[in-house]
Length: 485
Length: 83
Image (cartoon, rainbow over all chains, first blue to last red; front, side):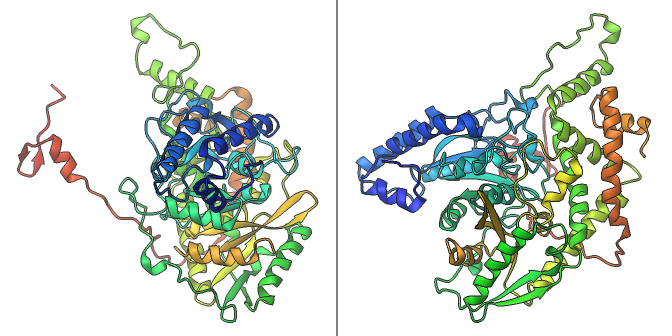
């Protein structure tokens, strides 16, 4: 029996009715990984021992007829910038190649309480900086839909592992589209939650005012189950909040007669692949046929989102990455120059050590952003760049607040182009432009779902459903209606 | 275009050493990216409300006091580390 194609609810039922054991399920996935990952290259670490021991615990509970939670025994992968105690966590960087996590991230803690089976850690662009997973220091993950193409990034290993049936779900992180873009490219579901809905404790920071952890799954229902398990206030992250009762979705279904869906005019201009536009328009038509009212809206500051993002992101990244000095966190340079002359043993020697360790340990894109961030934050430029970008961030948020007074949801494409060929985009700026539809959402702190809604040849097209702050549950409902239709 | 000296200065501030080749590369790419983000200078910002974050402080006073029970005038007494 092939066990690697179930949803979370199907697995839960299967385990309860003893159609298969958690160990058998775990084995199926480990076999699938051994077979498939040779060509996909989604994993940085396969944690076989941990997975099997976690599965056995669940089988023990079942044999004692104990109640198990919905996620118990369900095999998952974790993006390699989220800490799992005692497992190597590299963030896709050489500078952390030997770093073993000393504690569990809050999201991992929560999943462990639910009985998660962790199959391994997945590949990413170094420190989540990238849109293709090509910036990993270790390997380039392939898109399971077409092996010559990128899986998207930065959570490309996570989305590829789910798309190739090597995991039921995965956790990724999204700073400017890093869950939604690879979900779109690999044809799976990905949610970027509202900023603050999920604790960031134990996530290796990129840009702290934008980062969020979220689920990557095959179905919307699964995304909801995983999101419900990881969300909530955490005393270790002061930006996290309890998603209140008020925001909870009432069980009654939507009345499509009253539903208004906004289509931002700024998102359908030149630059979008006309075939993608066609698929997205078809999806919009489906909502219209169901009775929703389609309203054209304007988000006038859209064109400033990307430049603002590429100010805020490198600035915060350069500060966050200052801690990797080649002394803490494992990495040390190959041959430190030991100078026996006592006069030379001064601060210069230490400075040289930092310079060399960081030069050896960081990849090209990381250095580029550290440099950019350092420049932007340096004296004389702070007001022109960072402060200005923060103001633009506010203006972008205001655009959404105004829009949401008239409508309930916003629908856009996730990506202006189909997955590109590996090695095709060499210019950093052309890579940045691929985030055009996703970065505004992070700047505004909004929740958004990436949902596959059509195919062009072998490749998948993703629809982005943006909801109001903390209304993830409504986004799920809207997504379910169009899923598989 | 940004000067070579400027690139080297920023690299030093960022605690990165760059090879000659990398310096040249950064010089070129940097200028392109800066041109792009300079687009923000074209936007007229009249009045903007502060960016609001959904954040709230967490104080762990009790935990600190658990380990340092000596309080003098509201300050916590700790062993001296400088002589």
